Image 1 (cartoon, rainbow, N blue to C red):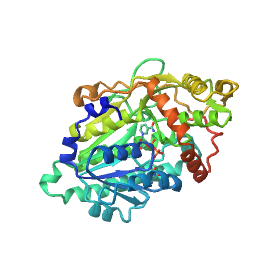
Image 2 (cartoon, helix red, strand yellow; image 1 turned 120 degrees about the horizontal axis):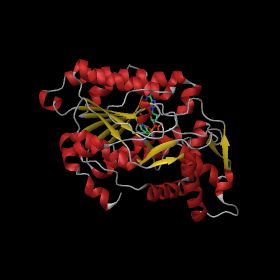
Image 3 (cartoon, rainbow, N blue to C red; image 1 turned 45 degrees about the vertical axis):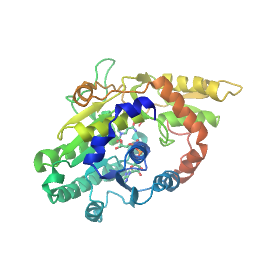
Amino acid sequence: MTQRDRDFIDYSPFEETYKKILITGGLGFIGSALIFRLLKKTNVKIFNIDKLVQKNNLLSVNNQFSCYGKSRYQFLNHDLKDNENLKKIFEESDPDIVFHLAAESHVDRSIESPRNFLESNVIGTFNLLENALIYFKNLPINRKSNFKFLHISTDEVFGSLGKSGLFNEKSNYNPMSPYSATKAASDHLVDSWFHTFGLPCLVSNCSNNFGPRQFPDKLIPTIIINALNSKPIPIYGNGLNIRDWLFVEDHINALLLMATKGKPGSHYCIGGGEEKSNINICKKICTLLDDLKPQQTPYSSLIEFVEDRPGHDFRYGINPTLILKELGWKPLFKFDQTIKKTIIWYLRNQDWVKFVNQESGFKGERLGILK
Ligand SMILES: NC(=O)c1ccc[n+]([C@@H]2O[C@H](COP(=O)([O-])OP(=O)(O)OC[C@H]3O[C@@H](n4cnc5c(N)ncnc54)[C@H](O)[C@@H]3O)[C@@H](O)[C@H]2O)c1
């Protein structure tokens, strides 16, 4: 965390309003970044619901959270597709705010096994909303007025852009993959719980994130890990698909601002304005690795173009004007610096990568990948 970041977020309004935080998906990439930030920067108590498929990730990440003690962090091993126990979880954690990040998040896996995506992303969100509403209705009036349900979603719900144009909060939903369709469905459920039942919900639609602890099957970790293991680096199609990349800590800043200043019923589009093609990202990482961990041949010689993903969206790009103007958010981190930081993290944490890969059975070779 840089001085710049410390200056940007004022944690006092957050701590004053929210003492107990319920986070779903907190062992994942973005959820764990949120928990680390809150444990380090505030005194709030965190309850983390995660279904824990990758047990070794639990060992490495959950153990680090647990160092803060039970008064600060509690892990609740639960699959959101099961409604049972959620009522009890709400009663016992007694949260002031919910950050809902749990989701099946990999497009390729959604093509292989869409049912898991329906169960986690749609049924899981429905179960969480139902129980959040029962809990919310019974809150005393002073706590009710501050309560928020933040649903963390993606720009992929809007479908694909051509060479020009940007998504904003008024863009039509047009999801193309089973992943984005289930995220779109969950966004609609969340909006309907606001409009129909008055649950104070907010939705973020964020572009591609990158940073430490992203699971090895996503694009940037795959490039780094395969390169380090001298394995082919698979790039879908011609590699010209474009994504708008955002460093994960900028996303966390946006979520914290939504918690303190965001208006219930709103969607906020979040993006760093760092549009890059997959092949350019890949070349950039290879060049940085040539410097950081030189080998006899340049890493770019490992790049291999593979058959394109079915229905592969061409381009995503975000116009973040609303969150800039309404909440005072801005991206603080430049891609060129943070991608280097991210590569260094993977270089230093190869045990983490091995653990996660062993547990998930992921070989790091097959998927070309985006989110
Ligand atoms: N990674 C991105 O670039 C990006 C961008 C925009 C939005 N998002 C959204 O942010 C959220 C987090 O993404 P991420 O990249 O951290 O994903 P991730 O796959 O790294 O983490 C998701 C976590 O959710 C948990 N989970 C999944 N299904 C669950 C269930 N049924 N019950 C309980 N826990 C469950 C997983 O075990 C995992 O720990 C997702 O909702 C995703 O759609 C991600």
